[in-house]
Amino acid sequence: RAVGNRRMEATGLDVVAGWAIDDGRADEALAMLRQALRMHREMNLPEQMLDGLSRMARAHAAADRHVISLRLLAAALALYELMGLNVPGHVALRNERIVPTLRRVLDAEAFARISEEGRQLNLEQAVDMALAESG
Image 1 (tube, rainbow, N blue to C red):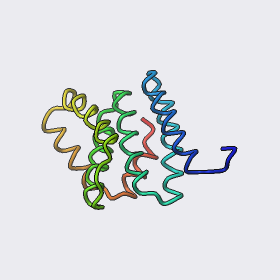
Image 2: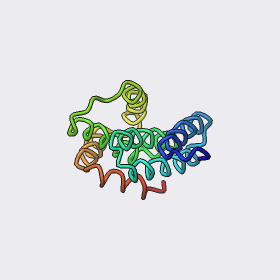
Image 3: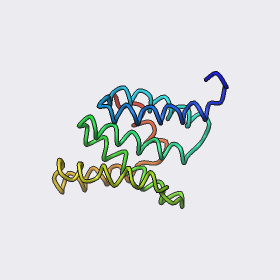
Image 4: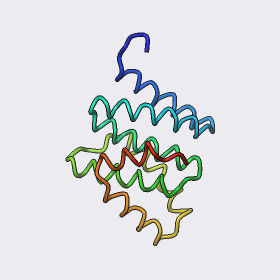
């Protein structure tokens, strides 16, 4: 913050949020991730917003909020494809770690339905959902 670089501040929030998830503090992480996502939106950085959706999916999964986790994850993956963007390796790895948990706790029908709901969201809708979701 002292430097005044909003992009660096948002990236720092993303990193610290990851540590909070690792420490079992998913709700604290979500607060930081929401703040970072708002900043990325204000700066009109769609790739960072997609990364933020994936980060939030991880935090929600860690907090056993599997429906919102899957919806955000499915939205992010569909939007990467729609925008013609490759999913960065670190994002793909994060996502690959989330999916088995989601498949284990959601039955196949629910997984398919929730995934489809997420895939139908545009970026603005997905970000709005992520920012509005309080758990």
